[in-house]
Length: 121
Image (cartoon, rainbow, N blue to C red; front, side):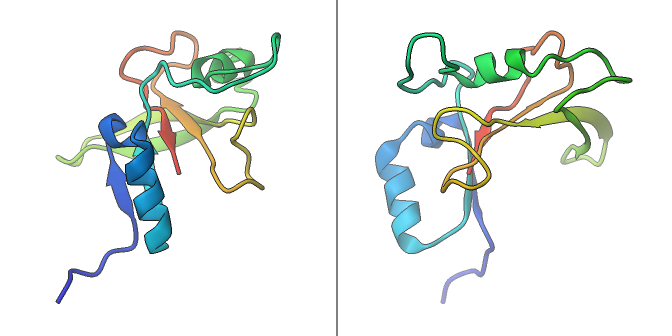
């Protein structure tokens, strides 16, 4: 007997693995996968072609004018709560109305530090 679950969550090793994504998709299981910050896709010259470019194009002006960024509360495994910012990517293969959606989640949209998360589902 299997353990019931609602979704698969995996790090960027699996997020870049096409076979893993295909297999999970065939099972009909919901999933959230992280991408490396360098994740990009084929695109026309001049168009957004990477998650980082989409985040930079969102025009962060600060906490009083966050633009498309939404404040979220991140809770660590030990219970510490931190304010982070999330942006839904609307470029390339990612949009709300498409099969795949992508978010950039970061503590600082102005700097996009390496600790930022680049999840996709």
